[in-house]
Length: 265
Image 1 (cartoon, one colour):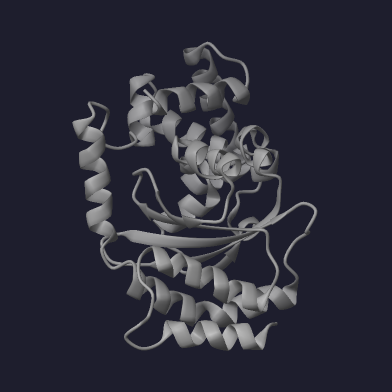
Image 2: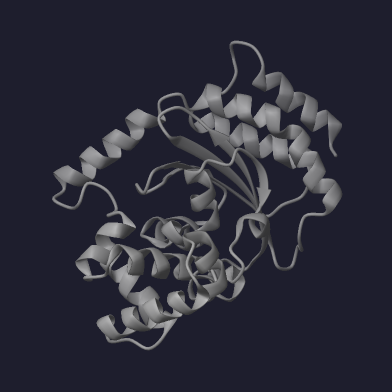
């Protein structure tokens, strides 16, 4: 821990000169850098199924395409961090604590998440008004390894400062979401990313079938889906077979492709 750097950051975070807006991301970056080592930071704001707003990141332009642009295009709806933001689940969480039982063998993980090359992602979840949650993520690449138990405990101790920073810096996120919707509407595209249920309805799936395949794409096993929906594992498998027959597909890879393509229409 770099105490000198920590105290300098804390000095900027208190009083009337506390950073707001874009400067808050840099302040969070400096605060975390004084505590431990990491490779990337990204800060997203979530509101319902709408396309998340990227508030800050440390990516190169090439990395930004994978971590932000591609993510905002639709894969965020299958992200465990997105699901946790909807509940919401305030606090500090490791990705593996939030991920479904088959997430790391899911098609979403293989086709999108592995492109990031991450060993681990830890997020600060800060719930705000109007159903908005800000998630500040710290990432380590495979070469850097995961965060140790001591490092994770340190991050949890830093949570009150991070929460205060977010609430001071981004008080008008509801307006920014509304402006983003209006801008997309004026350009002739859909005002927001369509909700998953709309996608499945367009594909002629029943509500039960839609609920099942969405959980499957998120990384839930048939057993986990059954427990969440209160039905038997056998019933889940029957519904999955029916969905595959309706869509004329035979694999989860094809199912994910149809899902993401439909979201982008």
